[in-house]
Image (tube, rainbow, N blue to C red; front, side, top):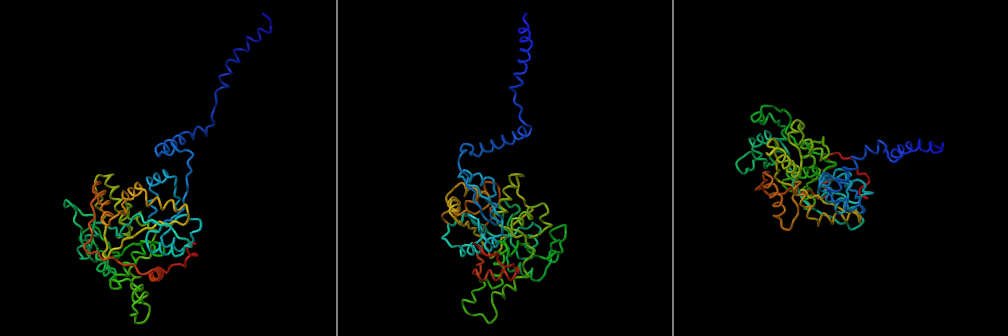
Amino acid sequence: MPESARTSSREEPRLATRRPAARRRRFPRHVLAAMPLALAGLLALLVSGNALRPFERITTIDGKMASKSDYFKDPEVQRLLLKHGIRVDIHRLGSRGIATQSLAGMDVVFPSGQPAARLIMRGQQRSVRTARPFVTPLALGTFREYAQTLVAEGVARPQRASGGGDTLYYDLDMAGFLRLIERDRTWDGIGYRDHSTRSNGGRVLVRTSSVCESNAAGTYLSILAFVKNGNRPPGTERKRGDARGGDPVLDVAAKVKPLINLQGMAADEQADSYFSDEGESIAPVSLIYEHQFLAHQVGFQKRHQRADTRRVLLYPSPQALTEPQLISLNGQGDRLTDLMESDPALRQRAIELGFRVRFSGEDSTSEQLNAYLRDHGVQVPTPNPDQTKADAPDLDALEQIINHVGNCPPADGGPS
């Protein structure tokens, strides 16, 4: 056999064994490690429906938001907004902080109540679009033994639960409750140990969020000022001209200041503390919103097939209904406010989160929520026969009271 033929026959097998090895592609380890994450992301897109629109532009809307930012933090709300090509980037701040600080770079703001909303709109140079998608009453979250103590003291009344079980709701006479606070009464001093195996020598007091930052605390302050001013908003004396010297608004502020806990926190942290395992130790009575309590009860019912009867809600009388307002600052913000007004799925999700959603007709605002609660086995709160509403002071008077009570720092340039 020629030498050239023997050489060729020896090399052929080596070439044959090398070719498959040359065709095998080895991926770097970091690429292989990333594949499960990429697959999970693809599955998430398929579930949300966004993989069907891979080239659709997603608009990010920046917004300063107070405690009602929990609506936009909800995963289902985020999914519904993505269907419309919108993502909301939340910059968390208290309502009054939103109203008194710069709004540069923001597309929307979402204060939790009307006083802050009016402050913001007063500082705008353009006609703004707004949406008031839902309302929620201010309430006091507490625990059953404390509510029973207030009932025995004659300042609270239990609402009747259907079926005769333990009620989740009580109506609270604020005038009587404030007398307990003014007299420095302790929980043990008003009979707490008659309803509990434990004792509490602490003062009867409400833990609030920061009066300088929070709409909840400002609204609670309005209730206190209304009651201490003879069930009328401070500042009306100026208009009638019947003040007898001094400043009537500051006189009311001085009466209110000892009644409020100034060690406040952010409103969402306030609710988180109340619903935590240590909530009763942190504060027996906490300032929260109704929707936070109702959403907690719906979630608890789903997880445990029963109500959380340890926690109960006090509805103050006179009452205060807060109206969060989404305010657009530019064209991008207009898209979100328009959507909040028109999209039925977003309104339905608000109901599922415990809000009273605005529909045509006053009664239907609450009835939609009541029907959802009944369907999910949660007791429906009943309206207090005393429908007295705590009218807030005018904007300037309220600012004067807040600043006096909270010794608040000066505004950081105001809205811009």
